[in-house]
Image (tube, rainbow, N blue to C red; front, side, top):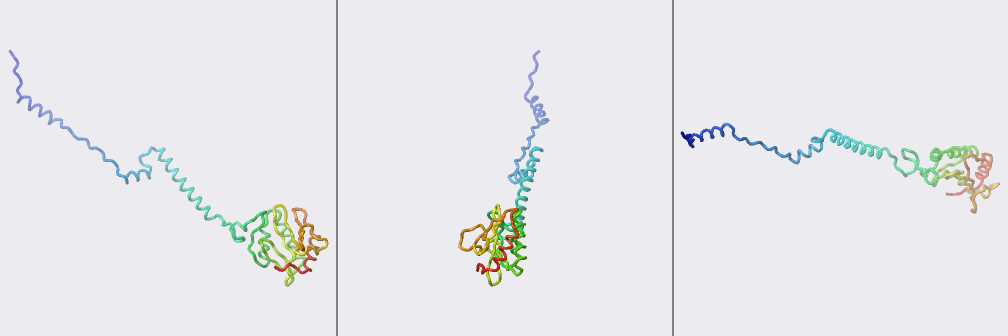
Length: 219
């Protein structure tokens, strides 16, 4: 006995039921982030691994800190030039000579002495004291970054200047002193180089007294 063939009508409903039982569903494709979102993630470190994000944040902090430090240095660093008016004191020129603005009076001379480097400051203070003690009414000024000493109406008789290894003391009428100071070959001026331990106060006082009694240099 032959099996009866299945009719198309019998297969159709079963197939239809099977298709209805397992319908295909479409999976939603995630949308790509917009450009603004990417920028925001890059700035915040989102999407990076924890270590990478930490390094990025640390680098940003270091950069900002470095900029702040440089800005602070620019604000606090003294301006060079201009003589007596910077936060760190007067500028020291060649040989360590203080740059002091030209002015009359005791104040600029004391500013110069205070700015003299190392042992030279003590030499300057001793010279200034010797002049004051020997010539009570001495006139003082700073000219060409050097203290000047003179007598009113008579002119300048002495000046000194800082060099690397000594303080140069100049007498403008040095050829008229006895004995004349050893330095110099000019017509009138003579000088002596004073080192750390060789200031002869007795001889210097004699020269100062003689020089103050002579017509000085008018400048």
